[in-house]
Length: 341
Ligand SMILES: NC(=O)c1ccc[n+]([C@@H]2O[C@H](COP(=O)([O-])OP(=O)(O)OC[C@H]3O[C@@H](n4cnc5c(N)ncnc54)[C@H](OP(=O)(O)O)[C@@H]3O)[C@@H](O)[C@H]2O)c1
Image (tube, rainbow, N blue to C red):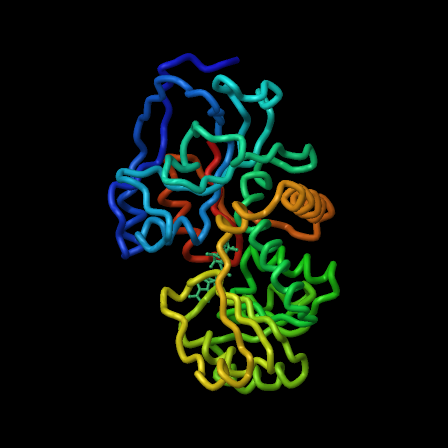
């Protein structure tokens, strides 16, 4: 049944950006919002679930490239169904289960309802649960885009850090499918232990005393020519310094909160090392519909065939959001925090 307007609904609201993560998340309030009507071309999504990703944390800190007018509703992805459509929208969208990706500076997905455009939605395959659909945009498509770059570079072995992440699961699945060997770096022994039988050629723990010498051995053995960096800081320079001739470092995250540092200038000049970035928003905007469709099909198949597991470590109601965020920040490798509406 179509909702009646004006539509009242609840949403998380961030009053101010705060570089202190804890203060930022403690400042979140649940507020009532009102939607007077749906404009032409808009779709109203009744949200079912939405996760927290590192980009949401960076957003709350004011350290992300998306800066919304305050107070802001956070959340860059989620799942739900199309509850209503504005004038001019294809009627077949009505009632469809969808994954949602929010790119602009409008309200985010941590809300009972979200107003979206068709270009930000994917109709969800019956094989995906609501939870899986809620996490189907940000990490899966980033992994796809990164692996396109790996293929363009012709790498047969890659090194990834933050290897206990959900994104890493997709990278590993895609790499296996394409015969690419993966070396993983994590920061906790327990994460390395949990990943031991997942199919990495080797795992190194960055907090181990012998991390640098272990890396040297691993490079001698496997010669990875692409380094996918989600951490940055000094680790970037350490790993970049070991990359063989004609390698590529692709920075797609800054989990350490630090600048990429320690990259040797001579390595760039004489060793043909290139450093570049990856941004999903840009990839999405520049990729054609066929590419996105092909990616969506294969990524859906990975989930259906349990090649990726996408664990959820805690699911909470909107009112329990702060509890959920605290849990997620304390054990990110265990799985996502999911808000269920
Ligand atoms: N560029 C893009 O367009 C794009 C798109 C999507 C995702 N990303 C990036 O991809 C990365 C992974 O995202 P995700 O959603 O898959 O993450 P996730 O599942 O939430 O897991 C985060 C992972 O990062 C590790 N980690 C956190 N802080 C760290 C630090 N300071 N040093 C080393 N490891 C750290 C965590 O390990 P612990 O368990 O040890 O905390 C955990 O394994 C993030 O950096 C995210 O911003 C970028």
